Image 1: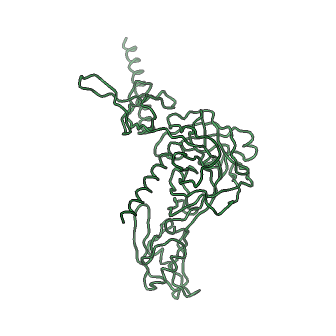
Image 2: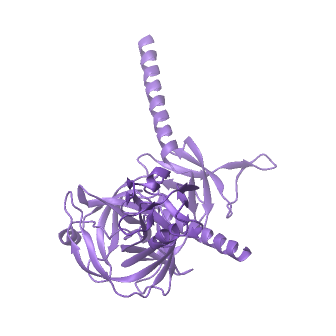
Image 3: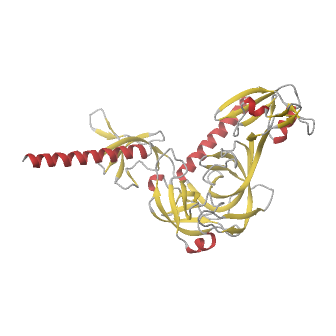
Length: 418
C-alpha cells in the first residue's frame, strides 16, 4: 500500500511540476493584449489548447456576469485546456480593418531627420592627424541634428556650419532617445584649408521593397514589414521625409544557401506615388496619392487567428504585377518582445523556387494570405536556406500604422499651437 501511495504521489508531483512548467512557459510567451471584432471567447493557436474567455464580474445580486465589451480595453482570462488559469490579458474591440493586399514592388526614398554618423575619421592638420569628433565622444550611429545652432538636413550642412565658428563647434546630437550637446575644436585641414571635425555621415537612403497593403478607408499603406536601417550602423533611419515611387522589376538574382538573391529593378519616375511618414520597427507607412488598382479589400486576421499550415504569398519577381505563390506557415511566435519575426514560413511553390530559389532581398513586405484573410508579411530570408524566412503579423503592422498616425497628428497640433 505504501508503495502504491508513494507511486501515486510521485506521479502527481511530476504532473503538477509539468503543468507548472507549461503554465509558466505560456505566461511568458503569450501576448498580454489582443484585438477582437466581437466579444467572444477565442482559441489561440498553440501546441496545447489555449482558450481566452471574458473575465467574470459580480453584479448587485452577486450573480456572475460578463463585462460588456466596449472600445475600452477589457480583461480576458487565458486558460490551459480551458480549465487551468494562465494569466489575464487585455482585449480591445476594434472594427476589423479591410485591407487590399498588394505584393507590388515600390521604390523607397528616405531623407533622414539629421545626419547619421557612419564613422569618425581623422583630419590631417598642422599638428598631424587628429579626430576632434571622436575625441569629443561622438560615435557611429549618433544623429547630428544641429551644428553651431544650425539645423542639419544634409551632409553639406555640417561642413558649412563648422566654418561659422572655426574656434569652436557646438554639436547637438541624438543617441538612443536622449539629446546631447558637446563642444569640440575643429582642425584646419592641410589639404583644402577648411576647418573639419572628422565625420563621415549619411543623410538619405534609397532602395526597393514590397508594399504589403493599402487601406481604402483612409488612403494609407504599409510595406516592408521591418524598418529601413542604416547599412553601416544597423540603426533605424530617423525620418524627416520620404517618398514611395513606382518600380519595374527587370530581373531576379536567384538565391542559394549562404547567398540570398535579390530583386533588380529601376525607378520608373521621379514623381512619387505616395508619401512616407513613418519608419518603424514593424515597417514603413504612409499615404498613397492614388489607390492601387490590384484587387479587392479583404479582412485582416488577428494574430490569434493565424494557423500553422498552408498559405499564399503575393510577390513580384517580374515586371510590376504580383502573383500568388504557395507557402507553409511552419511556426508561430507570440512573444510580444519580437515585433517582426512572428512566423517562420517555407516556400513550397515550384515556380518561385525555380526562378528565385525562394525568398530574396526586395520581397520584404510581400503579403501573406490564409483562409481569405491578410495574416502577415515576409520580413527576412534565412541565409542558410532561402526557401525559408520570417514573417510579421499583419496586426503588428496595423498597430504600428495607428501609432504613426497618432504621432503625426500630435506633431501637426504642436505646429498649429506654435
